[in-house]
Amino acid sequence: MTRRYQTWAYYTAFIAFVTLALAMASAKKDPFPFDYGVMSSNYSGLLAGLGGFAITVLAVMLGLEALDKERNSRVHVAAHGVVLRHVSLSLAVASIICFIGALMLAEVAAQASSVDQARSRATAEVTLHLDALGMSSSRVGQELIGIRGDSGDSHESVGGVALMVNRLAGDVRLTSKPTFAQLEVRAPTLDQILEASARRHLMIASVVALLSSLLILKSITFLLVMRFPDYPAIGGVQDFVVLGFGGMLLIKVLHMASFGLTPEQATTARWLVPATLAVVISLYRAMLGRKVDALRESVVQGELGRYTPAAPYLFALFACFVTMVYLAATFGNLGMPSVIDRLLVGAAALLGSAMIVTIQIERPTLQLFVEADRFSRRDAVE
Image 1 (cartoon, rainbow, N blue to C red):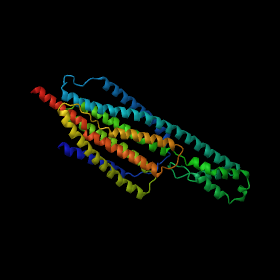
Image 2 (image 1 turned 180 degrees about the horizontal axis):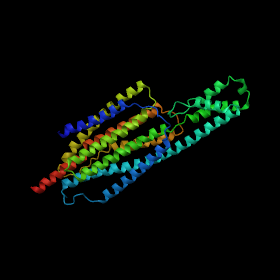
Image 3 (image 1 turned 135 degrees about the vertical axis):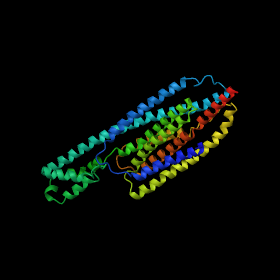
């Protein structure tokens, strides 16, 4: 299979994998209450570790000279400089995003812990009010069950306390007691606390985790192919790793963003996913092709190539900044994800993933390095 058909097969497989996975398994309610605080804390530790790894590899790589010192031809040096800048930029951006993501997820974990404590206190307060109204233990239990949402719902109460108060208002024996008036005043606040969930926060912060993970996976690939340019099987294995695991991470983020959508909205979203991926990949691939064609001549002639495909990394930094600011500005919103939340997460995840996948498959600067490496060897033999 020629490289041209192979690259299109990779693109098709990635888009088909993400689309089919989203179509086969729609977002459903959790069968039990999900601890978003623990999940956020684990993600935070993972990203901090990945950031440390990225910085370590970057420091080692920048401290080394050319990988093959005996190949000091101008062609080889030029191509090596191009790819070295590319990998360095990728690792530098990945380390920054990892640490910002770890900070954001640590804050989400703290918020989730506070939400759990507040919900426990709210339930205890409702129990005290009902006890003060003179209800029996069995009646109190029934009322508490009534204010809870469906099993596994991330938002435990949807106006349940206010509905309970309205229902109890028909009993004159209860409304005549001062405690009932206090419960009536507190009902909206208690409902707000019981409806709170950190699921929205985790969904937004997961975009940063997705982009940083993809960047590090891609950087490892570039380092291996750069070290062993004459072994295409290594590049093929790494392509599979990045596309496979990157696709699964993208699916998880899109699943979180689609939670709570109606069946009609979910169907529309599934069609938008492959369409967005295909359009972004096609446009960015065409742009890379024109840049590399122009650069190939300069590298072959031995001139120092100055092109570094920085668009995916600039977009990742921009998405990280926007996500951080947006989450900080809406940190007190503990309700269901809004349309803006879903659009932000979906756009950042799809656009960033599509651009990074394109860089991964095309490997523009690495292709120049391989060509220059073979050109140098041919000259040495002759």
